[in-house]
Figure 1 (cartoon, rainbow, N blue to C red):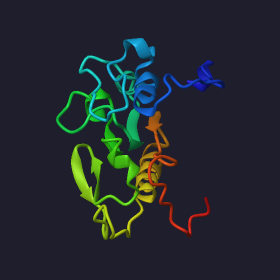
Figure 2 (cartoon, rainbow, N blue to C red; figure 1 turned 180 degrees about the vertical axis):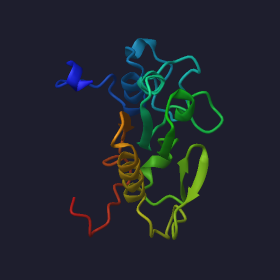
Figure 3 (cartoon, one colour; figure 1 turned 90 degrees about the vertical axis):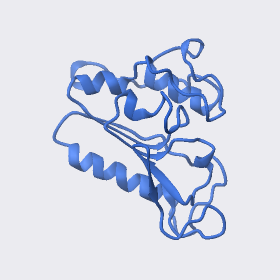
Amino acid sequence: MAAEGLVFTNLLAGTPVCAPTRACLLTGKHAAHISVRVNDGGTPLRADEVTIAAVLKKQGYATGGFGKWGCGGRGSAGVLEQHGLDVFFGYYDQIDAHIYYPPYLIRNSQEVPLPGNDGKANQKTYSHYEVHKAALEFIRQNHKQAFLAYLPYTPPHGLFQIPDTDPA
């Protein structure tokens, strides 16, 4: 896209909270026209809402999302695989995304257990490292073709339990 003259250098958030802002970004719609208008984690995108991922997928792009979604959980019209993503790995529910050591993450509506985590006291696998590894693997697999890598990371939301050894 940039080679053909489309470069975005200045951006504004679509709304003051995260889930509706993600919906604005992916659909290109103004906040008054999207289905996700609150940050409750349970309001899904409508089945007919077109995302940039769906448009690019039709053009032959590989499409992947990694991180926090919050615009439709499993079984809803809002799951990203139904809106143009080949793969999504992370949190469907934005409330769950505030726990950095969850018992599992979601890959295309399937639970992927995180070893050593129970969502409470047992905290071994830091979820954001797993999300980042999955995103890097997607990019490595698709770097020779056109791709969209959508990476809505969770930090600094929630409990902010970043490992002490993290350089951040």
